[in-house]
Amino acid sequence: MKKTFTVADMACQHCVGRIEKALDAAGVTGYEVVLEGKEVRVEESQAAAAAAALSDAGYPAVPKD
Image 1: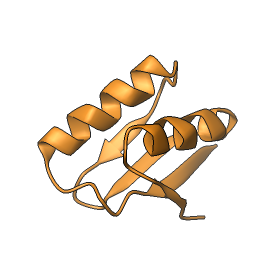
Image 2 (image 1 turned 90 degrees about the horizontal axis):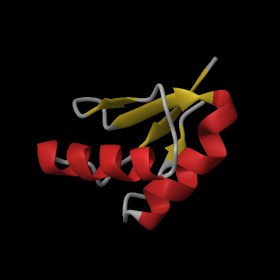
Image 3 (image 1 turned 180 degrees about the horizontal axis):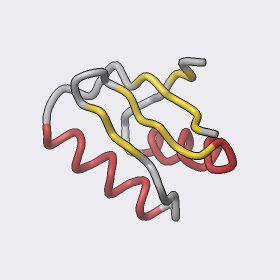
C-alpha cells in the first residue's frame, strides 16, 4: 500500500531531482515523485524514512491520507 505526501515547496524539475536524491540516499525505494500534483508516493513501510529524508532536504511533507 502506498502512502502519499504533499510537498508544497516542490515547484520544478530541480526540486524533483533533489527529492529523488534525498530519497535514494535514505534508502527509500519504489517511490514516485509527481511534480504536477506536488506529491511523493512511497510504500507505507518506508513512509517514516521518506518523511525524514524530505524534511532534511528542505522539502517538508504533509501526509495526504
